[in-house]
Image 1 (cartoon, rainbow, N blue to C red):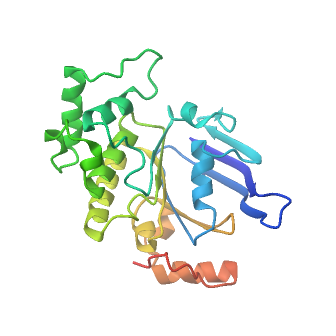
Image 2 (cartoon, rainbow, N blue to C red; image 1 turned 90 degrees about the horizontal axis):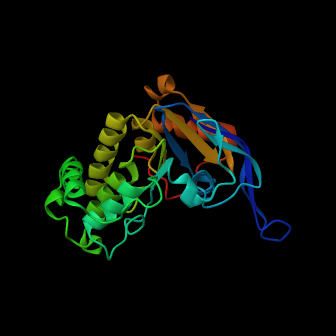
Length: 264
């Protein structure tokens, strides 16, 4: 499904600020995999997401989705295969447009050139049915401006928009980190339900170790631009936060010091 081979990225090469963002990343995800990604600040998690989505281009390496080489394709071309939800609830939607207008944009993603953007009565009926799945009443507010929604409501809408056309790859970039605990748990439950129902191949970055262990069928930990741990579903079943921290310290030779990491 998704395959990265020897992917590397260097920032500010040849300067005093030179930094290795990714170094020799090899990652293969099978259809239906739900992989959580944990690591300290600067470990390379966001760079990994940006390279997969097309925001950045790797210096070296090969990226493929279903066997198709994508490393030279721009972000908009990759959107036919990739859906992404960002940490900031303000990202991923157009605040001055209505809920139905935002959904219409998502609905048109990947369609043939000339597909009409306008909201028709048929599409409006589809939008209402899809919004009902969220269970937060947005189906009754199709004309509301998205900028007027709460952070949790907007993130729920972003999640729906990112999965509307059933992408081959769903990227979740710390998509609950900016929410309060109650709303974060709501979005987590919605995520689990949508990913399970649609059988989406999902890569989720999180700073919450408990969440990283609880969700998905595989966990990878990054440090200094490398994948240092790759934990299978069988091992995850009995894994604890303390054990995960212990493995990190044993492999890296240091303690996980990032205070943004939530232990659960």
